[in-house]
Image (cartoon, rainbow, N blue to C red; front, side, top):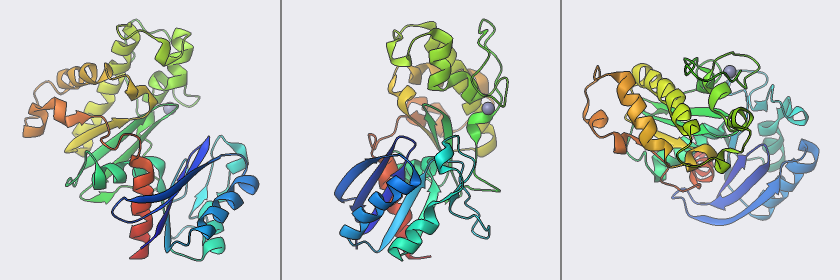
Length: 290
Ligand code: ZN
């Protein structure tokens, strides 16, 4: 069974054809320009590689409410050309096959839960730390959408006492994304994150904010594992710092086997950058049985 996968990102569209077991047959990348330019190129690729279903993991915000008039739309994105773009409707019309649709982070989470660090789990959190902060949540075996979809990057955190940076989020004076996303780091330190030395105080602060947020997520969602992906998390020195902060925030209040092994509890993705496209493949497979 051949399934299409589309990882729709703000700078590029990754298109693949494969099987539900994760074997990818062919894959291309198309730059993200405007819908009028980019969508026909994607449709052409899938036309040439006949598929039975398509899974889309998409940048957002997006409308995931099946009963909504704008289900399948990219809604209020800062990428203005893509505002109110009916991406699901477009491919339904072009390809006439079942289409699975979810956030890019839920797709990454699904990829990890099918093929990576989250295999066998019913409750798992995937956080991407990069240009923005996004969270995918698996709860009781289901991807969480709720009234919209989780926007856990905008939860409030306490300012590190010496940090006078104003924050990068136009909506919140002290949210996680505003303090820790890539552009925030660059603005605060005057250097791109990957130019900062490994022992720079920037990483201690970054881990402080992420650790604060993760401990709140642990209290609320009770995940069996937390997977941290995205460009910033390529800085592997963050992992021990984050684990330490989380432990100090939890302060021994929660006692579980998982939390006794923090190295196995807060982990990088195991799919090595392939989690997004593999998750999209699974979204397409799931759409077939709906
Ligand atoms: Zn915010």
